[in-house]
Image 1 (cartoon, rainbow, N blue to C red):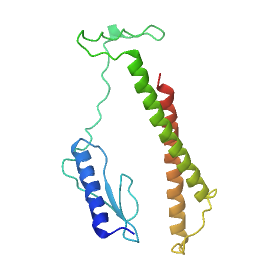
Image 2 (cartoon, rainbow, N blue to C red):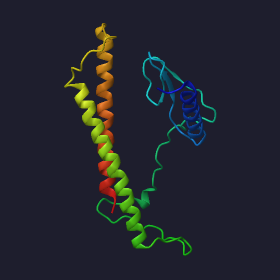
Image 3 (cartoon, rainbow, N blue to C red):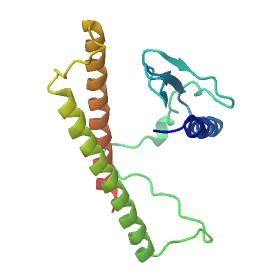
Image 4 (cartoon, rainbow, N blue to C red):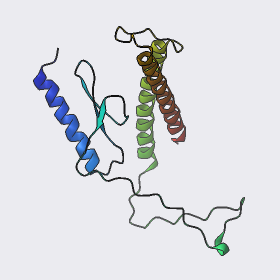
Amino acid sequence: MTSSVTRHGVQLVLAAGLMCAGAAGAQTVVYKCVDAQGRVEFTDTNKRGCKALDLPGYIPAPPSRPAPVAPAGNSVRQGSPAPAAAPSPANFPRVDTGQQRARDDDRREILNEELRAEEQKLAEQKREFNNGEPARNGNERNYAKYQERVGQMREDINRTERNIEALRREIANIR
């Protein structure tokens, strides 16, 4: 059982981290959620009973601009080679192949660990989801509450599956 001092300390650290992330140019809204047991959660997903935080330093995303149009004379035909990349300046730092290979191996190992964790999370979520018929909780006498929880579980499973796909793509892109 955690003491209230520890819990409040953790909340303060989380709030400070979120504020720093906001000051660094984060482009998402952060919500503070308090569940029935009084536990506090900070998330970027708006759930029932959550309130958006007004974080100092939050910079909203700039309006999107259309992509620049290339002049008619410089169009690249399909099938023709892309223009060569600009060469690096002479004083640009270089990494030898052995060091880069070690960095890539470390990155691959970290991504594989994240992939294993996400796959375990997905297996647990699917087990709990029980093919769309999870066990009803005692506080879900109202069928709409149950359906809301099932919908949230479905969203969580979809998000985890997208995370797994992204991690697999990222691992495949490592040389």
